[in-house]
Length: 352
Ligand code: NAD
Image (cartoon, rainbow, N blue to C red; front, side, top):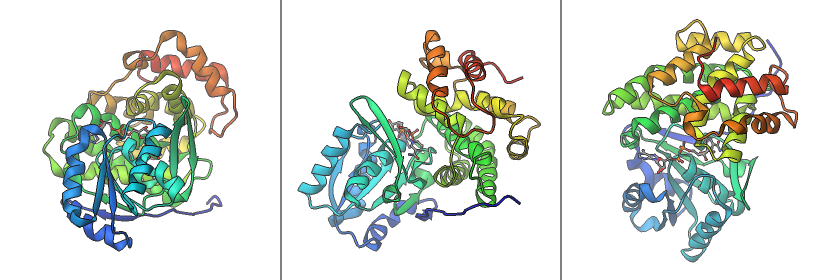
């Protein structure tokens, strides 16, 4: 077995249907008394529900979370907390809302209770993103890791198929790249395989039987594990490309992950045979890249960059940006291979 370092940043996890009922006691458990509830404008009603449950411990609702965490929004939310003498945040929503909580925690060190309502996995990572002057910076800091995560699968019931599918594929992407990470370790490999297994069996049911709570619970479980992998080991070309495409061409986050993943796997296929074998077994297929592509197709998720806003004349630029700074990947990164990968993703070709 390869040598490895295992250093797991852990949050307390409360998992189960109806577990949102435990919110007040979990806030108290942190020694906090006044919480600001964060949400997007679309999820204001979820924030109001959380606030009602908190009763006297609810200081205010801040419902202006948006994608990419603009620094101005994080500052406004910090100011609201200062005015209300808050001592903790409850972030209820997807990666954008939890990302806002992290940006605030980075400055203030205040504890976050995360209540995820998508499958993005951000709640399990010490990774934050912050956009200032149009440029998104990302970093790692344990201060931003939520202290407590409440996974209540019933909160995903309102997630429509068009968000649920790509969101779950985003979690699969964390797990796939965790399998061939430079600092991979056997525990994260187990979690990654289990995450791919849980998500690939549950997501097709989530999108066809929206009320099936067992499938939603299974998908939340897979997302938890995928997020844990992302938070514990380094990523490679897939995450790098998605970051570049999202930041440069403003492509939607989860959909970009969905489209690029099979092509990044095809790119790495020969250089990461063990990872591909484990992923294929977890997916129940022969070829992991094809398996992921076929899964996205079954979910009715986008398959081509051209369908999610990528301009055809942006491929050269994206390939250049993704290859100009060296970073770890099992297969060495070079322009022509990455340009081909992007072209395959642009047209949504099934991996050969
Ligand atoms: P999101 O948080 O942007 O949510 C997308 C939309 O879905 C929003 O309008 C939201 O209000 C709505 N929504 C969320 N849950 C819902 C529900 N249950 N019912 C109905 N509507 C719901 O989407 P996301 O994919 O979860 O997060 C994407 C963002 O998260 C990106 O900015 C990405 O960079 C970040 N992210 C960060 C990490 C990390 O570790 N730092 C990991 C994954 C994603």
